[in-house]
Length: 329
Image 1 (cartoon, rainbow, N blue to C red):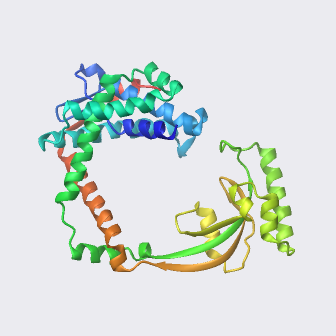
Image 2: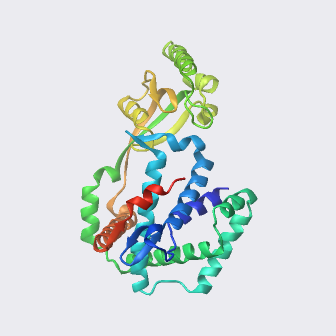
């Protein structure tokens, strides 16, 4: 199923173009039309993928004030389609479009993955994902990949570029790390859906009881094995070393503020109530020479993003808001 989800995400990054009337066009990129039909199929694929990972409740969840997940997804996919056309148009100019034989070979592999899961195949059939559609998507996918590879190959990264990057990203190469353990009393169910108010209150009470046991000198590892409600419980709550950005913000802030051997009060995150114990701290330093390969890739990615931004600004892009509003999923 993991391969199939990856496939669906890959399909989301591509789009075929079909000649259509203005009433069936959601956007144009220079002279290329992005059809309502293609947009609808992409939205339907995203629906299958998202619901398989997060459940049907995901669509009405707010991702920011006044913006629901479904609204963000709709906007995001349209921009993906437009962005794909911008790059594909340039790839065509650079003679990077694959042959029919190359496309067929790749599509045959995709179809094998799809056909290995009958339920998934049935879902795709129901939304009109056929061989023609897959071929169109894969043609663009290969062309876009070739364009990026050609850009990386032809773009020079100098020693000066590397030194400038290293000096301006000190935190990236001098990372503070914390080794910690925790006890988690969850406030979400197994599908990460928030528990009812009464159960959340009971969870907090339980966390307070466990915290008292810890503060009274109880063995943290043993208490974690007994009470913690996540996979680390078996190892006494051990999370190993982690850096900034690896954990959710409230957890990270609490962990990095503690000294070695200290235990936090109750820390609330979207997962529940945590009791954190810091066991070690260190600074992980990466030398300039050891960081060269990583820096080169990061610089190339930055330069590529800048190139795509330049291509996008140069393209004539029109969005048909009236048609876009009519598309639902």
